[in-house]
Length: 278
Image (cartoon, rainbow, N blue to C red):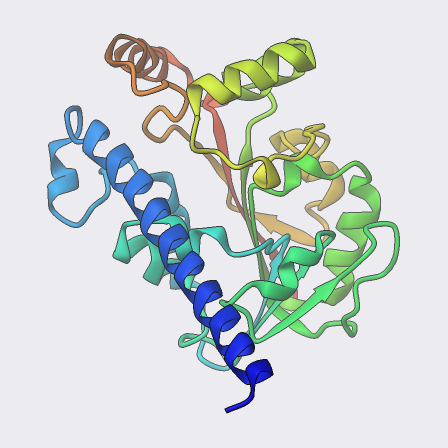
């Protein structure tokens, strides 16, 4: 075997080794987070998730709307971090649509989407241009924590409307503009926001943090951009277990109290389910 082939094999093996170490590290971080939460939600021991898990709640409802022949668009699919980093097998299975649909298409402004292993087809797009998809070609759109980053809601809503079939579903999870997370993000200076995020969510990767503007993040905004004359709205608000606590028990308990006394209109997350009229 030539020296070049030996070198290539060595580089390939080193790449696999690094990928394995990264995977183990990410799984370990996720497992540690679950272990901390289990002190407050003992049911994590049965399946790996809490009774108020936002990911489970959102994706269970998405799955109830799927059909085997459906073409699904993951709008803002990213690099598919959850596929590698979530230690809960059930949550991962809920988010993996490839075995439940005819085709999963992912689009994102970040080239990392091209490496997303959960997609059948991936596209990088400019948010100011048309999506690289035909009119009325999509049965269901899923967008998870993306709407808060959209700076041109008119353009985005128009394109989602264009590619979605009549009778199709738009499913999105995003922070509530009037919830404490979004309000803190809007009001705090950038330097303070970054410092708090690094302390509260130390495992959060820099490549997964994007500027948030919250132009589409209220029920009123959703009705504006997806008017009831063309769309049916079935959205609601949600509070999952606290996510910003730095593994501090006192802070975690304090945030649980905040969640308990928060009225529905001020809950931290919007679960958006909108159906395009026939």
